[in-house]
Image (tube, rainbow, N blue to C red; front, side, top):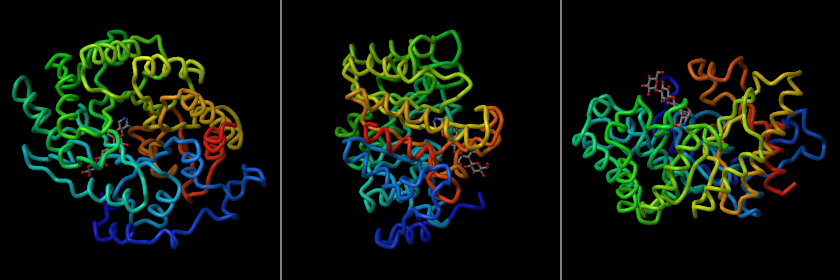
Length: 366
Ligand code: G3I
């Protein structure tokens, strides 16, 4: 973890006034963009006009690097901690909480007028060993204490919590996933987690967040819909559904399928958001320029589909630039086939890619 920086360095980045932040330079714009697109407005300005949010997942250990903090604060109006609010970061030992990294991201968000999406309270990954080894009443009690401890600490500072993340199995079963210790508690662990979160932070919107639920039809997607339907009917305090939208261009639903699916959740009275979007290009056919153009189209169409749904309140991209994407790690990148994936709106030098302009167009209703 050589790239981690001290909180002192991060504090310095946070302290930089906006006026010193610099901007995306005219000469640095991607050559794919047309001349008319050489001075792009920050996405957050267009989002504000559209009364939506445009967000980014940030990692504290990049804050000392170049223009990372500057570009993030200038471009986006919503922030999701990529790892810093997960269980292994916030409660590394039973009942012993550490909010250092999460607090610093919240401070950065306040400084830059950004909303915070809390991610995530109950998830089978990035669990400390002590928690993943629990079961039954011990695990249930630990889960409630964790939700209360974390949501309680950040009370009033988080706009939306991903309360439960990825509870449902991939594949044909449509059941709770087999590799999560929480599944052993039965489906009502989800109800209990949401109730504990509402009690700890009554004003945060509470989300169920998952991948491969973007379109109707698959066993996993139908199971997610029936889960949310059941939670609503049972009076569980759930306010929204997060569609992660880690696009795999080799097989991905159309924008209209995505919109129809979001509409059925909206009809349950739920907000919908795109919470972790990226669009890898490695498996898209064509020249590098054609790949980036197709990436722009895919992104535009999906973001526009979400914004066509009144209850779609925002879209978040899973990382600030191509270099810092989780898909740059070969461990994860191989899930999306051949690299390079270049899945995000900014290149490693923070130059806006064609994808950036696709998002702008969608925000501007074009
Ligand atoms: O913290 C350890 C560190 O101690 C160790 O030295 C280092 C060695 O590689 O690893 C560090 O852990 C890494 C962790 O991120 C924190 O940086 C893990 O290896 C790495 O696998 C982990 O990846 C994260 C992944 O979730 C874990 O499942 C990614 O950064 C993060 O982008 C990704 O985000 C998830 C969302 O939370 C949920 N939806 C899917 C999405 C993509 O997988």
